[in-house]
Image (cartoon, rainbow, N blue to C red):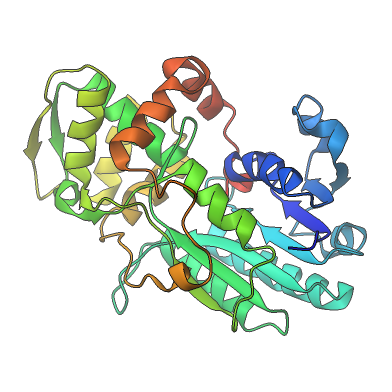
Length: 323
């Protein structure tokens, strides 16, 4: 595939910072955008990319950042930084759509979340859906990839699984531990995102992506315990635990900021599994196939010090540029 001039928004975040090396490896010239560019000074790829300042809530800052770009990755979220993050994310999406159209961008790529069709969604998931729809309604062709829990050291959703399981051999849990999830390894997410820059897509639409394993959330925690060498966890389900109480519980046990914990917990109230596999016809799975959940956990624990660095990543986790 021909190299594309690519802008990655949210370059200081978990997904953005890991996507950039994947794009560089494929030969794409990359421009990295961040609200605070100095945060990228120590990135291993810093000297191979152009870094610009940009804030999706400030349209004037997007003109220079988008100029000359062919593909733009939207990997910024406002969760945990403002009380009305839903409204702010919608405004940001409209700003991106307008800037992309004005700059003649050829494609927008957005990472959204898996969710069941035709049901009420949490604020977090509903906001993701709205942002995707705003981008798809724009004149710029848009690829929206929808993923569930991302398994990787430093991923907020994985760190929640890890810290709850590490610290609570016996836990009272909400009923969502029986909800179904389809985790996906961070390496597989990056594969789909990077390939989305150049693959031919028929039209603007959403595409579900997920790993090969479907399980209950509680089973994912037990499997993590097994890989981590912990004894089996005892879970006592209390159906009356509300998302508010559950988010307090998560906030007490994990280092996830309270403003981020509640939207994440609310999102667990519904299943997060793929409802179609159309992506297979456009982007083939990585060589060797998709990574199973157990292998993804092993890789996450091995990455950068078998878990300790995951906690360090999370302490500097930026929900505004998380991906």
